[in-house]
Amino acid sequence: MSRTDGSAFRVATSKITAKDIARLVRRSDAGEKTADIAERTGVSAPRIYEILRQHRSTRKRSSRAITSEMRDKIVAMAKAGSKPRSIAQLLKVSRQDILQYS
Image 1 (cartoon, rainbow, N blue to C red):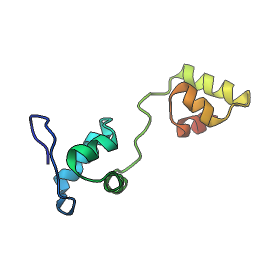
Image 2 (cartoon, rainbow, N blue to C red):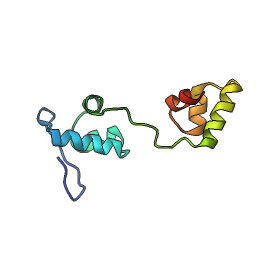
Image 3 (cartoon, one colour):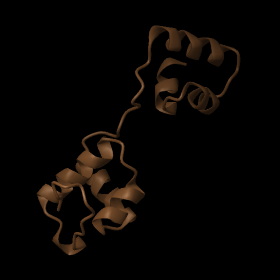
Image 4 (cartoon, rainbow, N blue to C red):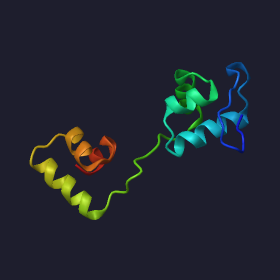
């Protein structure tokens, strides 16, 4: 499925191997957008989402670690009445991370 020179490649979706799946998951986990993966591989975005859903043991967590300072901000903002979604957007972390501390 991949080339060492980084050029685009195509995969027949009916012939996706376990090795191909591992590469798709690895690329997604590295932060590559699903649309970009789809365009480069020839696998449709919905199929890639399906593969990721089936082959990831857990959902990708926020790439930004929650520090004690951020945790204090989360708690203070939640006590002040801010909604988890707005806190998450402001601090650039997942809403699940916010819900864990609020």
